[in-house]
Image (cartoon, rainbow, N blue to C red):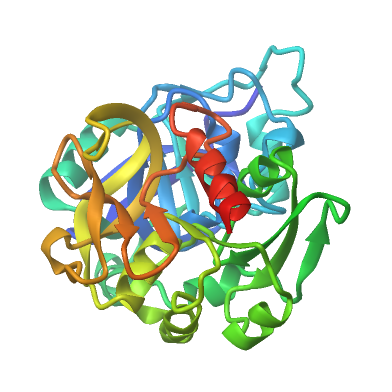
Length: 362
């Protein structure tokens, strides 16, 4: 059993302090505090590169009850800046369990805090918007100095911090050849492509368009990833070149935003983002609504999509924000949500079939 003598603290940019107890690693880390609403899938959340620079709050009150299994990981390591839960399970029970969440956070050097009112924290973020904060196991002795550091923090070079250093090939004997741009990709994107007979070559996020075209791919996949999409000037320029080919392109999350920027649209930062496995999305074209998994803090501005480029195909049923675009000037479609969601729901996995269908037609 863990001793509850070790205190931990959260301090927000507005000076609010939450007192709790330490689990996972010890130390101090500043980040952007966000909340995720998934009831399951915490291992996927902790290993999702899209959370780079962020301190994640789980709204579900009990985390860790089925333990940790590396088969659920979405990347090689965790890049979250901190982890906040109401209660965590010290003794998980599941036939797939290979470890506990406390040990996992220690191995990843991720600072955790439990025993705080996560509902209060979530309501504050919903009302005031995402804000910076610090998670620390140290006593807060100079509040003003720490507040200055918190307010000065920004997430920079996010894609550069999580993308692979060199290309990697998978499933080399499969039928279709797909180049997957790694802006911070989740492993299940690759798995879904492999299931459908795709040889996948994962390339760094800044790989020149000319190098990708030299591989003669049947399709190009644009992955999810962290940070402000407008910061990625080199990937945006690459996509301007790639969209002028007839190669099928499928973009997810950050990939969706980058293609929109390459097409002349604009993006904006949402008040508190969409993070969790219960986001309703309406497919405008087919007049259907799906429940989706999402993790993003930015969105494409609906009316900024040029009419001669494409049209919004999906919208968020809660706030009306853009959730998908079908392009008329290229063989491309993109979505803001995660059709590959390993932790579920799987309602929109058919989009991978559509991508493969476009490669078959080519």
